[in-house]
Image (tube, rainbow, N blue to C red; front, side):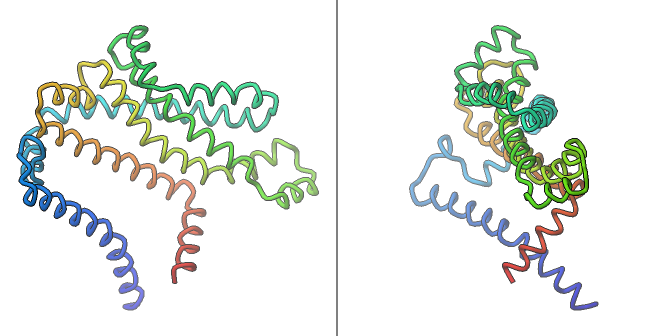
Length: 269
């Protein structure tokens, strides 16, 4: 019992020691660059000054962060619904895949920063254009991963269901959908981060609130401290979104997460 607790404690230490060491090393390098090259504070503030400025600007950051979070979550939610529906349709009907996929790829490769002003002209400077851009960036990785998961089924499993006289719908629900969940969550992890990026792009192009607006305002006023504060807020927000998705994945497909962890232990032992 004592050995099991000790092993769990060692695993927790190993889990957190590397990222903490990386953060500490980054801060030390940051401080050394300023000291060695005598970088003025208005160009690159020290880590202490940056941290102090972040807490001083919480009154400004908090309401604008809520705006960005709302736009990101709504855009991501729409991307998830849209991606799942179209992934199922594309896998089920090959004709639709040949018709729709080229359009999807074309839309994804279109430069968002160039098209974003059009959304502002069409929908104004409210939430709508930011949500559309957030959705636009997030749907593709989720859809592609889900399609891959729906198709990446072992032929033996399909043969087994066929030998048991299972219908195409039963095979889809019992085999393909569960098999696609790990791929789906991989897409959602990436989609959550790019959805946040989409919200920032929309706010940066034209908005009167949100973290993207603060970036533009701090840049125009040469307020480097506020700019760094916004960057810290975005890093924390991105980490929070990713961690929440990982937490949902852990409980939604616990069978896969446990199997993956055991496999990692096997290969790293």
